[in-house]
Amino acid sequence: MFRIAITRFFLAAFLITLPTCAAASETTVRIGVLSYRELDGVLFNWADIQSKLGADIPGYKFELSPMNGKQLREAVSKGELGFVLTNSTQYVALASEFGIQRIATIMLPEAASPQKALGSTVLTLANRKDVSKLSDLRGKRVAVVANDAFGGYLAAARELLGAGVDLEAGDANLVYVGFPMSLAVDALSTNKADVAIIRTCLIEQLAKQGKLKLADFKVVSPRPEPGFKCIPSTQLYPDWPLAAARDMDLELAKKVAVTLLSMPPSIKGLSWSIPADYQPILELDRDLMIGPYAELRTSSFRGLMKNYRPYLLTALLVLFGVAVYFFRVQILVKRRTIELRESRANAYKLQIKTEHMARLSILGEMASTLAHELNQPLATIAAYAQGLERNCASGQVNADMVSKVNREIVAQTERADKVVRQVRTFARKRMAASELRPIAETVNEAIGNFSTMLPALPPVNLDNRLPAGKMLKADHQQIQQVLTNLMKNAADAMITQSPENRLIDIVLDQTSNDVTIAVADRGPQVPPETLDHLFEPFFTTKPDGLGLGLAICKSIAEAHSGKLSVHPRDPQPGLVFQLNLPEYRNNE
Image (cartoon, rainbow, N blue to C red; front, top):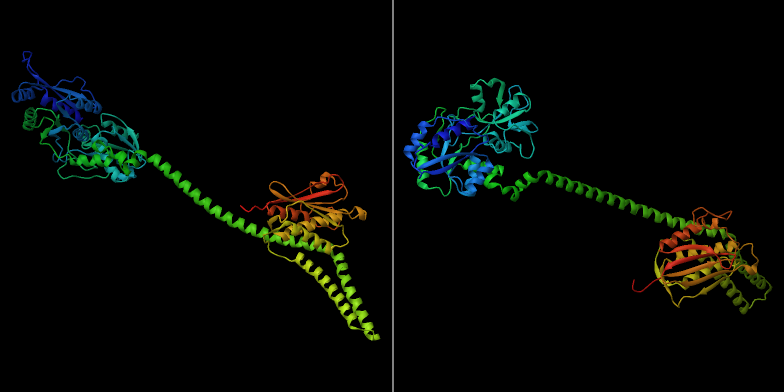
């Protein structure tokens, strides 16, 4: 309403109606006026203004051009306007960009001073208990005219920003009502909004016109200002300025300013004052990052947060989620690593214990033969000792006889000791130890130990096809355990065969990457379905077997990065167990 009054007053000040016989030398000066509505062709009586301007500024014709903000800026950029009448924020922006200079400032009748003339009033219904301060607007429906209206949005937006409510960032739900500004009050009265932002003094003017009752409304966060006739919710700022274009004739600008400043107040109380200080508007623009400070939106952290807050928050949430996920994964990996180490340690201990049990199982199966093997040297020692005693009793003892008997007793004792030491070595519980030594020595020792412990079992034929001194890095005692188990199984498989058909063949050979040890027997043919289960734990074809021997042999082979396999002998009958172990190379 007051903007229309301002426009009319400005028309009264500048519209000069020339008589039809006016001189053709008159110069037309265009005045661009920020207007959100057209004037609807309303005519006003400008007679007094015309005579005043005609007397003071002869030779000029002033033409009023209402424009919106975009049109006004474009006209200034093209140099089509001599003077500009616009709101404070657009003036600051145009002054910064195009160098327009203010020559006078409008004074409304309610203004306390040129510096304190206009602000925003944040309004809500009187019975609303949940809205008493600006921070209460968060999440509320807020009716506004437009986001470039000074009193109807910008002044309040800055104050709300200081209270922690960023309207531009969506901290409140904006309800745009357009002009006239009284529509914001209507939206509040009809419950289409919880709060309305209007320019100062509008609510008092509407009450004076009888369009509403002040008692039905309350001002949110009132800030009374001494000398100001209305109640604002924000600080007060200078009102609209009249500015001259950069290339405007200084004498003409001076005459226009003098004419305006010398005019008495209009019937509605509008008047002009000397140009106000618009520094508070610059500070508002800086805080809201508009006008000359618009580049802050892309060059400052706060601007980036304002412009890209949803994206930045999303990115931060994603980064936070990734960080949480990363730390969770690290914790889980650490926990799983500890559990895996404990599991491996327990599995290793179990493997050692199982291997030890397997060796004891083999020794149990050999017990009768071991007893026989030890009984022979013991019986021989006893016989020699008894014979020596009888010779001593008969007096038939000489030095040669005693020496011979002692040698035989020592030989038999060493034989028994060797058997006992081999059994103890085989049965001893020990930790795995990898060493580099010739594989042929390991195989020969396994054959020798096996033959010593079980002399009544089939002979072993070794076919060594490896180069002399072929080395293998492994736990050689575990390899001997595997070979002993395979030779024991081969002997058991041929238990029903005639002595001349009982023979164990061991072939040492190599492939491109492996050393192979094949143990073959000549036992009866084994069904394919039995071969498929031979390496499964607790599977056995022996009445008194545990079913662990081959399973342990397979695990030992895999622990050495090798493998243990079985296939029928060709030609049949019999089976071939083949142990593949990685070949040792000096460059590894």
